[in-house]
Length: 327
Ligand SMILES: NC(=O)c1ccc[n+]([C@@H]2O[C@H](COP(=O)([O-])OP(=O)(O)OC[C@H]3O[C@@H](n4cnc5c(N)ncnc54)[C@H](O)[C@@H]3O)[C@@H](O)[C@H]2O)c1
Image (cartoon, rainbow, N blue to C red; front, side, top):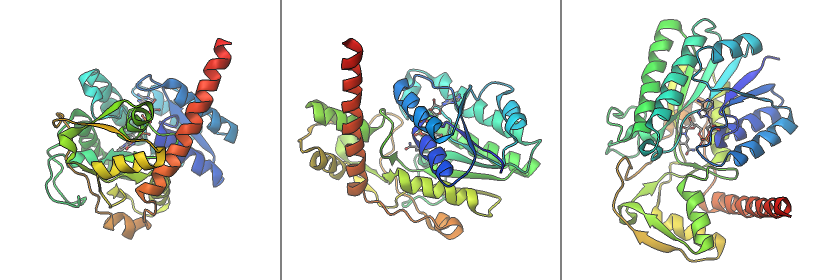
């Protein structure tokens, strides 16, 4: 059995994908640089679970010139699931270079290494953010994506163009997946669902951008994992697909869902739109359903229940660990 490489395996989606692959009996090796964009101990905890399951993580920066070439030589993988990236729509204000390094150079290094081994199938993460100023909803993969409104989105659009070119020139099998606001247990502390949960629990105010007039197509992690595995297993050679819940939710309903599961009321501040934000996201998933049977099944209510259960346990065990360390 040949190895499957999962980049970004210590990250939120990479962790769940690597775990699911291992649980169905695949040989998996992860890659991650454990960067400090958010709490590194969360990444280490995910990696420890993967290690127990028999998934090692190679600690490396994918923008390094020979990293992918060395990985291909050492593991001769049949497939690569590429999820490592500088995520987050707002971090460009602090560190714009990290988007160029990880998302543009890192992706280019992957493609360039694969051109010599065109039998390796690559499934990689794009983003709903490429739809930018697109006004037509739901967002179809045939819609315009040439007006990204933020630097993160621009790097993902750049990846889509590079993917097309490398597929065209070298016939590398490449499937790009545009994820829509993914949430769930072991999630990302920089994302609104995680920050709002923490703030509401502590009695701190939360900011609703555009005075709360925003909708997001929140998509539960288990549905995303099924979509990624579906894309991995299908026979399509090249494509771009939406992976979203296809049921957008207004921010007020989203906050009410968190309040209900926490049993606490939020202090809401309605503030102006932030640069780089999108007002609405809404996935048309007809193509992903047709080509690999993608059918998300988790409502926001059920998904947030799972997230908040996990978050309470995780926070409690962290507090206990700190107490033990301090004596
Ligand atoms: N979570 C979402 O809602 C969402 C939505 C759209 C797209 N995406 C994309 O999905 C992928 C996974 O996102 P996530 O939410 O799991 O984010 P994440 O930040 O939790 O995971 C990304 C992982 O990649 C690693 N990484 C970053 N740069 C690296 C580098 N140069 N070398 C090696 N490792 C590096 C990070 O340490 C991290 O563990 C990303 O490509 C992201 O852009 C996520």
